[in-house]
Image (cartoon, rainbow, N blue to C red; front, top):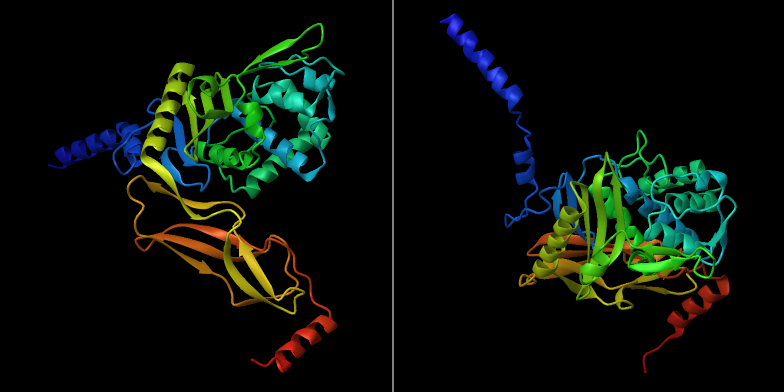
Amino acid sequence: MKKVMLTWILTLILVVSVYPASSNAAQSRLHEDDDGTVLAESARSAILMDADTGTVIYEKKSHEKLPPASITKIMTMLLTMEAIDKGSLKLTDKVRASEYASSMGGSQIFLEPGEEMTVDDMLKGVAMASGNDASVALAEKIAGSEKAFIKLMNQRAEQLGMKDTHFENCNGLPVTNHYSSANDIAVMSRELLKYSIITKYTGSYQDYLRKDSAKPFWLVNTNKLVRFYSGADGLKTGYTSEAKFCLSATATRDGLRLIAVVLGEPNTKTRNNEVSAMFDYGFSQYSLQPIYKAGEVVSKVKVQKGKTAQLEIIAPRQLSVLVKKGAAEGITQKVVVPEKVSAPVKEGQVIGKLVVYQDGKVLTEFELKAPSAIDKAGWWTLFKRTASHLFFVDS
């Protein structure tokens, strides 16, 4: 009897070791949508996100840490756009290619040591041709060295809550300890898309560098969806033998912008087909429900001892929620702000939040910020304000 029991236990251990509980099939089912839809079957990891609200429509192993290849350049472009927005960099600034930048292999725009191009042209080289050399040249221009730029990349990733990411270079060439996830790539893609000018670069199918020189360089976008999928205008492809075929894509239709990320696809055809299917699903099933229009007053808050007695909180952009088509009923909202705040109030200071519900369940929350600064009022202003209340009589 003991011998039979021992044999049974050994058999059970063998079965468990050969067929672990977290099999691929089980993981796949965990990431199916509520209606049983399965997308990006060939990808190692995938995510479909609404760019406006950040709502995840579909995901498959979206937090798995994987080599991102040239999708890394999304962060390089993001830091470039942020530098332009701050005024520390201009599109017309000249960028000089160092010996190091020119030595990059893989995809490149063949920068010669000492060659100069504008930031505008370098962005074309990064976004369309996936130029490793152009990426390093921009990094050196912005931070002084690629090493310093990589530090900025990792700091920005941390600020964005990208917990599955660590960068070791600015272009995605294979290197140890360089990884990201589909979720994190969607997050930084969403941040990059806040700069609407970026799709001028990522959405162009062809262009030229050195057009008026003796050696013009024809650029053809590595992301073929910008030509063949209606509404597609970015963002970045990637490939290495380790990462396989990767893509962070974006497309917009009827006011809805989607971000689709796939990592580890077997070939470009499968990659493009599966991303197209993700877009088809998102656009056919979902729509944006506006809550407040851009510039509309959301709430008013009293300001104690401020130069202005009242703060109007306005929607900085259209505030919307993502809903299933035909299921937009039962949406309510609640503005949560204090009755009053004390001066000074800083521009961009978080005052409260807007909570949106559907059938009593929280759909999303928006931070409500002060649109402008309000300084403390002087004693004379406060005196006049108090006096007007004391002597005001209804007629």
